Length: 430
Image (cartoon, rainbow, N blue to C red; front, side):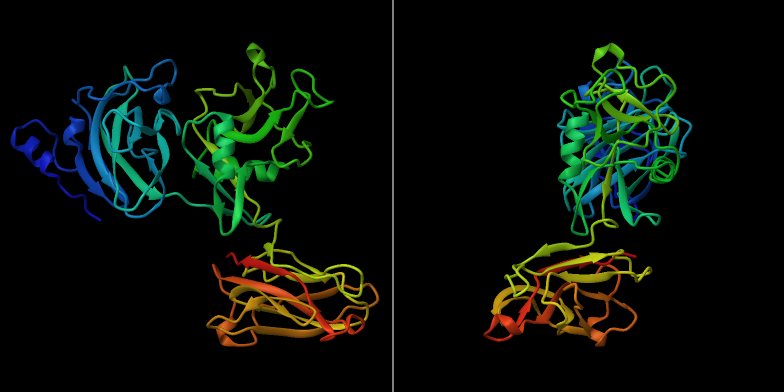
């Protein structure tokens, strides 16, 4: 989409006080209008300082941005967006985004995310205007170049089926943890990334940003109440409670510098450092979505059957359409009794048989899978084959969400002589 020219920019051009079209305005109050995503040119060669210092922009002891030019950008969607100058200029850039005012509130600011160039992430609302400030680190020369605005993306790690997202925003470790856990993707809650082996570590550092990631928060902290706590290397824990076994410390780290370093982050290149809670050098954080290890979300109710328990449905393998390896199981159910798994588009909860029906047919109807037997262990199991839907309307595709449950005979329970498991919602991935 081509940038639009605001009335303010035209006025500046007529007065001879603005760079050429597509280069940005020297005055924030007359910021050049642009919209959509794509690449936009800037020229801050002879720009003067118009913005004000802000603590969020503090880097290497300065909160100023020099040689700044301004753009007023209209968001094309409600989403998280990424602005970057990486590999698009030789200027030592420093960039920031503001929520509609030249003096703030500031949404994000960054100096050196990729060499001497910059990246920021910020959340935007469809149709709302945001001010973008493209400048230099104080003391560096201005120049010409390009910045891009793109939708932030989640990246699949095929090795474990999980998705990852890097957010280029300066937050304290605690604020980054809260932000990560407030984010969801395809029905899965995010958390600060946990690294359990070198392959995952390398994937996160070298893949998510398209180049080396640089300083970024990771999901571990030093628990001073832990029985294993000692300085500088005792008591470290992942936010998910996973065992803290794999480590990749930079030489000489952790060192608890200044006596207050207890939060984990990357220290280039691709090794770890212990940081203070709000270290100004960390301008990004990494979110992990456990889509590969947690298959679906349970909902609805199941009722005690004659096995003595209530049947719970679960999935193992993955929700990947390409892998086609999702296995369903429901237990406990009465031993040696037959049952079936079925799925549909809607979630309901209504009495049915001796339990509750948790799936509604919607517009597609309900797909019934093959009959299976619980055997003496009282476990129903079925390997789902995505390539063989019972009807065309119930074909499972990437991005589709389906709800699964199990029906089984329960002759000792009386009444309708059958019962059901609870429901399992699964959103399918590439």
